[in-house]
Length: 551
Image 1 (cartoon, rainbow, N blue to C red):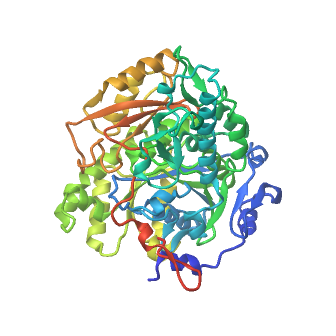
Image 2: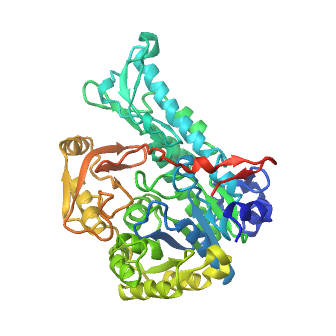
Image 3: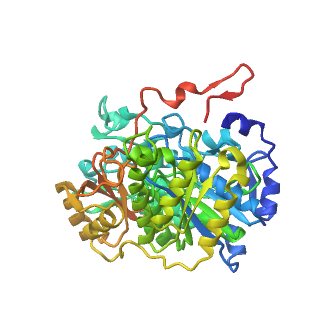
């Protein structure tokens, strides 16, 4: 079988104007970026305001291994499978961050014969959205530094500044840095740091903003620090929000591309699920729901991560209502959770406790879960059938194999039919916690109901922040947990379905522009680092100028 990169490079793509026209978009609603990419003007939402929404299917997974379980591949497979069985469908994915692309996971466009294309563009600069988000974030940082230098008329206490710079590369050396060195002309000397762009609040805001006006309002509401009197200071007070919005006026528009089999795919925004909320933009979901009968949207990492945040944060803010869940599981992941990667059926049985826990998380939200067993090379039919049987025994609505990687949409037809049946069933969707609950109770609800923890331990810094946020009237915001994706707990070494643990929360951050509170669990970092052998080692240009090694 050819490599995913070769399949993508040899694919015969349709002009994006044809994809848009087939999806019901008008010519004036589509702004092309070359032949195969476009941005969609949000005026389409006004034109189709009275059209009923399609069904929303969220794709998530069990606790993944470090290389991932092929959730994006499954999302594309499901989309192509729905097209294969004659359904009107659209796909919504996040944009790829260069951090994972050149790190351990590689690209984020799917794989094999289930990809979103043009693959190289998607995995690299695309339409420039992430660069624009980084520029807007760092403009605010620069204007804050200039304000401190030129008189500090707002009376900002430099020791309270929480706004950090960002860059879209894994660079651990930037986690903690000193700025303003070299004398008074270079600014106020203080300690700060960088986040990866996908973990920035500006990325979070772009992903949940309803339109350009809402984007402007949210950017203005960003809190950068406090005055000496303890009052919050915002981007609006620094007169930065207007210029930030101008940098992002094109970024707010969803990007339209296509699958290898011609279904429309919106690829927009790219927040990480272990740090940020881990879902594509609200506006992409809304546009897709107006042009298709079924919308496949992917949440990052496991159901305890991106899916929980999609339901408890994004669906609240975006007024979205999911209809069903597709939960990705793999033979190799279940063996991993049994700590027996070369094991047989017994290892799968032991590791299935993780699958059972994730099915339980989906049930906590009142939705049906279809388990997609994503086939990897080396998986036997007996192993696949065993995972399907175990899934049904633990309450899955259905369990089907996904052979999309090697067969395209035809290999996911049964999965597509099962997802349609689940989405067409009535559901009693609800959240894990009410917004009116105290901050600590909301954190505890997520830890207990999603992670299976006995409770939470709030370190002194976190307790102090809760008191501060209560005083500032931020206690009704939802919670975005920043924790490892490699375990249901906050400890990446605890595999499978751990019990008897307490989730440690070391600090809280108020994302007043995005509209939630981030709880930092364990030693979770907001700037990843490259490993000893990053994927960037394999990426190069051949003698003909073609990219090689990208996956």
